[in-house]
Image 1: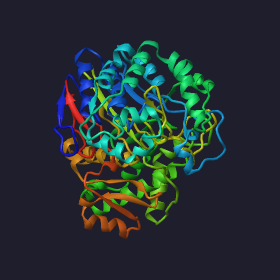
Image 2 (image 1 turned 120 degrees about the horizontal axis):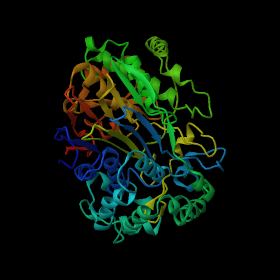
Image 3 (image 1 turned 135 degrees about the vertical axis):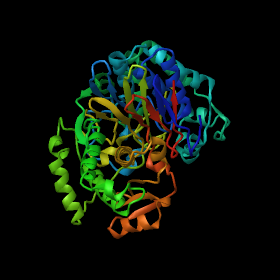
Length: 518
């Protein structure tokens, strides 16, 4: 497998297939499938490994949300393992608070691992953590994307002795390709495999976590940790053409926004005009619609505690109303949070079970520089600057595990990291559904991304060309030109199922993604 940025080799198969954001994690997933594990086992083991392989993007103190399709029953369920706000939630936050303990939340990651493994999996957590322990103890090469984040965030990593010991073992930061060892993380993973939630949420880890956070200005308590529970939320459902869309449930807002956007795409007659990578009209209209969906949606709160008319928002009538106003020049203002780190991965096994999940730091890498037990402490409270959760409640985030079904059978299962994830997923879905592209061709097409610069503009890859980009600007959308295959545009970690049941995937050239069949 190609282990860097750029063109990747596609994969296809009938006995199982995995795509993740890193070739080592993909190999872990396939190894688990080959050893007899199912799609859930493979995904969880790979995701846990990513906390070691890609510690700039994800952490055990962050979130993990997962969608699982059980082939035997035909049921598709959604597990929200996102983070909770502390119950002693401050009334206000500022940008300066992002680098302190004040923005630290209650982790959902490990509770989600245990809940998914118990509900869908066949392997013990002690088995699931073994590959991650081997990477942490034996070391991994510091690949370019990880090294660049270490370089960028070196001041934060130097804040604590734990950060310095891992990333600056000779007082100087690691060099590209040098081996990164994480022995304390290995010990933590081993203990999690043996003792699980008791130690993490109610025992020594919870004690040390909360002491460090509170010393840095945070408010998370041991009672907050002990009270954490995963949520089983009914996925949101819509239709695109002849396909059923099953998406992440609020307050993981991605499924809602994906359905909103695709409902408006249906009104654009893109089959006549061409894909966004070729047609000025399609590109302009999709970007205008996406901008409206994203900025309006950033203020949406958890429907358990705030007014959110989900059925209206995902309706075809609402899409027609919004699309008419957008085309008439209606614009919306708002803010978006800073760049978050995240990973997405999708796995199918030989029996047709499908798992797709996003897990994340939900913030800049090592945003506060805090560590405990060799694990970085997630500080995703920058989301509070837009949507304040209920004290003790889930935060609202842009997370989008999703599946499309044709006649009850999986057609696409996908997701993407980055704030551009909705744009990434929608463009790839339309490429595949409306123009019959393979995933390999689709991910190579130039694309547009999400809102940037405080939501004042949207990003476009320069190789879309001035004819297309100029049309967008003429329509009144300020754009920021970014490099071809920009990592800011996410990565389509998707699997496409052909009518004969074969699974297809291809790593997105924008990231270090890799696909591999059993």
